[in-house]
Amino acid sequence: MDRAEHISIEQTSGLPADELDRCDFSFDIAWELNAPYQDLLDLRALPARRKNYGFDPAGWADEATGKTALFHATAGGRLAGFVAIGQSWNGMAEIAELAVDRQYRRQGIGQLLLATAESWARSHGFGFMRLETQST
Image (cartoon, rainbow, N blue to C red; front, side, top):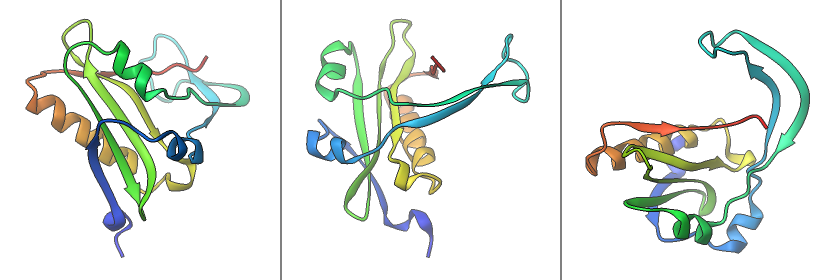
């Protein structure tokens, strides 16, 4: 069976707090790319630690300006991940949040969410899309 067969991506106006609370969107940081960030194999080891950005759907919606969208992924009827995308200050589409629950990782859900965000950006006239992440 195709692993992505049971996964669905839908646009939503919000994510229920109880479903978010059941998810573990944390991730481990153990490596960092060295400046000037051109060679993806030029890494340095860091003391391993776990990080979780947290996500406040209401807060994100309040802070967002311009066009926005929120998509959630479900797997087996449960929230498995989400992507929040909107218009950035510079006119680009910006992925504000992207997360996949630990138990659903390595099944292509992040890839499906990114493809959905890209499709949304194109359909809304954006020529560029950006995503920023940090190790701190």
